Length: 322
Image (cartoon, rainbow, N blue to C red):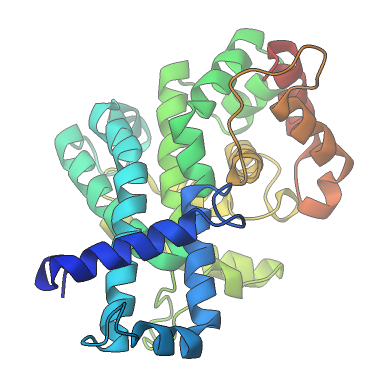
């Protein structure tokens, strides 16, 4: 059932209720996706009292409780999808994905077909609450052109990180191609947060990356299974890139030495997962990215960040006042 199936007055009341929650002190300063997650958690923790409240004549005495929850869920989804999806869709609609053909065993795939499949893929992961709640980093990276500005500096400097990205992974590609590759990988990685049936012998069992832990053998098995699962739904995206995207959800010390792009994405996603945009840094103050990378360097081992990549990003952020 959709909002159009309900009375306009009910839809408006739900909208006011959600607006009230979003403007509450503990939520209004959060990114929108994080705000949605907090509201969902609040509702789950207060179901008995909310059930009584919504039966009040001022609210929804004529609706079943699950109908009210459905309306709230639809309202929240409409808000977040209206903000997040246009940013992602703009990238998919305008990117030149021919870079993928250079590394694909499937031959040439039309960009039109690839875009259609990517749009379908994004719709699936965004419709899944577990995946969507983990997309704040991806959204901020897309919205604020993070990949573009850091990769431009990396290619300009041609120092350690440049040589690792282009050499260790044997990717002799242009800057514009690398930007498209990394942003595509960012989208793909969000699939790991979905509960998926990855064991053919037990189709009822569903797991996500959160069920894996740090056991190397379990990680290897999970990565192989989810990559195999995704290959048919992402035609035209080389297996190599799907694998690197999946591995970007794991700590650097659990990856191979040459999986540099995965380690870079792991760091950037962490940085921008709780990002609050500041238009201008006060004179003399440490810039936001520089400050975050400095703290991350001190705690790299604990969080699983690659120190050399962090150090390169820290220098770039400091010199550009980011």
